[in-house]
Amino acid sequence: MTALYDNHNRPITYLRLAVTDRCNLRCFYCMPEEGIRYIPKKELISFEEIERLVTLLASLGISKVRLTGGEPFVRTDLMKLIRTIVNIDGINDVHLTTNGVLTAPHVAELKQLGIASVNLSLDTLNKERFHQITRRDEFEPVMNTLNLLLKHEIPVKINAVVMDGKNIDDIIPLIELAKDHPVDIRFIEEMPFNGEGNHYPTLLWTHHKIKQYIQEHYPLLYKIQDGDFSTSYNYRIPNYAGSIGIIAAFSRTFCGTCNRIRVTAQGELKTCLYDDGVLNLKELMRSGKDDDALLESLLKAFKSRPKDGFEAESKRKNHSSVSESMSTIGG
Ligand code: SAM
Image (tube, rainbow, N blue to C red; front, side, top):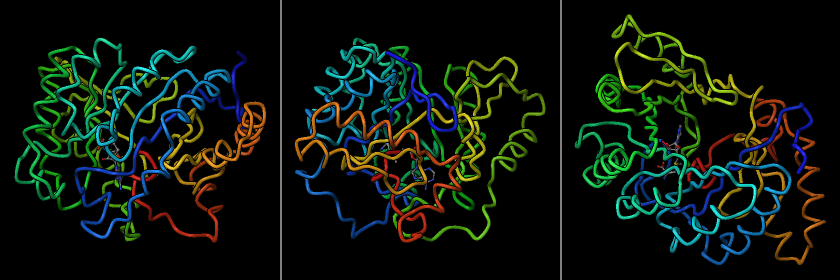
């Protein structure tokens, strides 16, 4: 296996794989409440196609996989897929991003399978606000998942999107979770991927403002070293068990070290979150292309990656603006 580099000399080691576009929540910043057109099931990338693809990508140098969606646990037999992926040669780390609604019954097996970490999306610790944001009454199952993940000592990151006028009062209570628990609380800039196309003319809660807000409440907040390909600016508070991360997802400050690619639930390759698909892998596989042909197409795509999310956005087909739901992309 040779290391895989893109045309900007960035190593590519990390695949984010959306296993479904369906979700059991309706977070307003991600999806409209109604009228969502889900992909027909036969158009979803199949487990066999995923296995083939991940095996090929592992042979190129991808060693980390994150399963996401939509809500991964909405896909029938997700655990079967996870059992397969953890056993693929070259895949060293398998991670999950989940909303936690259906996750609890599987936590013990996730531990047993050696899942490297779970990102749990949780924008508030207030039950009513949870309902307002997600349009579903599922706060308890999510908290149950969080408690089980902690009990099984699976590393947990909590992802909270920071939404002006909605959950600013939740920032401090979420951070307080890190006082006694070894969780990373990560605050994400809200992006326009909401399935509707509307966004703020100017994003108010930028990573700078989030940091400033946290610092005002925790003057002793201090910066820690970010990991090599980290998308978050990371901080600690003295004597807190967990850490704080801030993700400039809309400001896009981390593209220079981006090591990730995405495959959507329809089997489309994205070499940047902000592109609109650069290669239909599912079609290539279904049209009978052999492994060599697939590898050649993949390598070509990796050698034409945009340098950052702004370039990717400007190159979208028909110059369409970013408006699709995160659930179709794989958050
Ligand atoms: N269903 C899973 C979950 O909730 O974690 C995985 C998919 S979800 C699309 C992945 C992440 O994307 C979640 O943490 C969610 O908060 C985030 N997300 C969705 N829409 C977003 C937006 N418009 N801006 C920022 N983050 C967003």
